Amino acid sequence: MSYEQLINNLRYGMNEDTIVFVVGISRFDYAFKKVGGFFTRPEGNNPDIDWQDHVPNAFPGFDKMCEDLKETELFKAPPRQFKRVDGAAQFLEQPGPLTDTKSIFWAIWTLRKNLMHGTKGKMFARDHTLVAEANVVLARAYQYCLESEDERLKKVAEVMAAIEAYGNEDTGE
Image 1 (cartoon, helix red, strand yellow):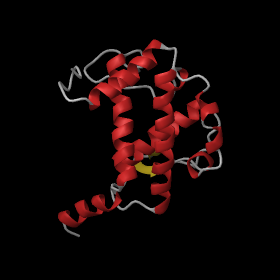
Image 2 (spheres, one colour):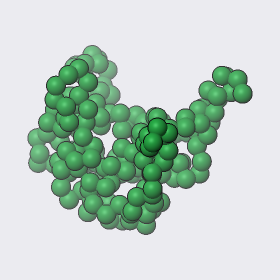
Image 3 (cartoon, rainbow, N blue to C red):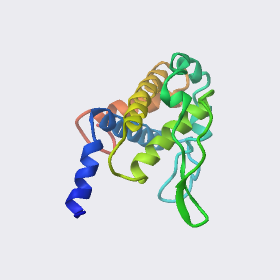
Image 4 (cartoon, rainbow, N blue to C red):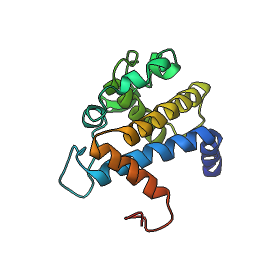
């Protein structure tokens, strides 16, 4: 297979839902970094966001906003993590159903990691389903930020909106 064919395989999976998901999750990640308070490493040049604990803790009760999604593929059979085990990269065991805010956000971030760092090839029907359902969750998370009384989350929504405005990339002005 030529390099061009490999790249064309990537294009095969880039439907509108996938693009929306990649942009949406990237905007959240950027906004969390810009607002602060969600860092796992507050020192250094590349602060990582703690999608497993800090982010879910900032969204108390978010799982209640997703009750109607419990029967979706994303919630019943969330994506598996891709990790290095005994020197070889492989998928870990299937996690259980998403039942709380922590598991919801971790599944969204796992899906993002799998798409960005996984096989990078043809997306299967399940991949498309997971991405479409994750977009619903991201839209609700944004709405949660807009309506939140937590000033950090309101700022997250403001940063996300400012990114989309014409102007300076760093300031949104």
